[in-house]
Length: 136
Length: 331
Image 1: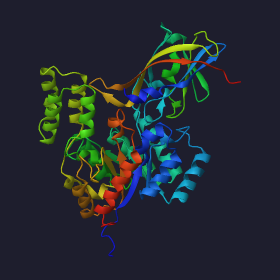
Image 2: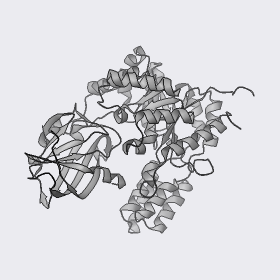
Image 3: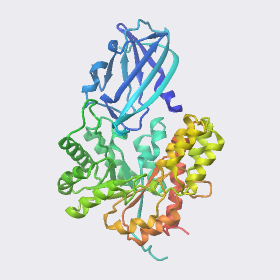
Image 4: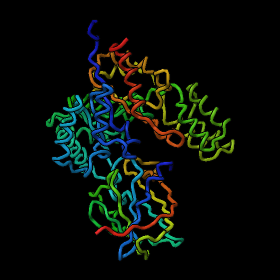
């Protein structure tokens, strides 16, 4: 964790869609990571913890339920591209939301300890931001 | 002016500019432009860091890449591969998959015109051996990074050396990382620990133990007995990740050494690296007849980014001014 955490969720990260609140998330690791590296997405919006089972993510134009990213090893999340978290939180353009996100990126080549567990690089975000309207 | 009595060339790993790239203040093209301006003309890149769409490398990117090289007077030299042995959470990559991963990255190097691929330290010797014929066929050398805390007597490196000597493959070799020659503890790291709440007495102990080349592995216990917190433990752990060893150890392995990752943490206002004695390293490379690139690898950004804007370009510029002096290009 460090000051670059500030870049994980940005001022323009929130988008209101008819299906809920989308949150654009940026990686804080220096290289693109395969999607199974998305090991921990602990998201609270406006004080309500979002069940990971309700989340899906879009990366490189393809949408995956969060529960299925572990098998999407061919898909890479690029260093400068956002990964969009789709949440079921009701919203509208112009509405403010407090977003608390603990992101844990499992680093698949840095293994630690006798059990060879991948290092988890964490970042923590706590920001109140305004949702923009979905771009047509 | 007499010609320099060596063939050592200067370059930079674009990894050095990761802070600016991350913050979008430098694009890949900008990184290559400043490399050319600095005289670091041999370019090393981490494809996963800077090629959008990785592992697919588009024709458009390749076209831009070679145009940039021409425009800025630079040359592609090396790419860095990773081996994601825990790509799948529920299983280890098979040996076959590991070899396939290496071959995929050899193909990327070929696309980018780089003749050298950095094989990350966790690449098993048997995977290097199996990938070597493909790399040779593609005209690429797979160089194992010798990264701290590893050194030439470490069992893992010895296993690799056994493969290199037994097969005699021209595609295999070594890429020493100068982080193995950290003589003095980087002050950017200890100062950051203090800002993060480490106890000054424990920081002094850790730095002094390291600088005296004492038993850094015992520091964790001492920090524990002194009631240290996370910043103290982090620093004690860090002290076991750096090593100092004698640069002359490279001489014996020089025929295998094809590229140098010139790691650094802080180029001071006096134009020297605070921790790594390049004035004693470069003469060893000259003596050994090394003819590859000294490729800058700046890694100090993460230790100062909480208090200063990071200026990686200036840091790399200073390192190259030092290299130019040590290589006899300037007085």
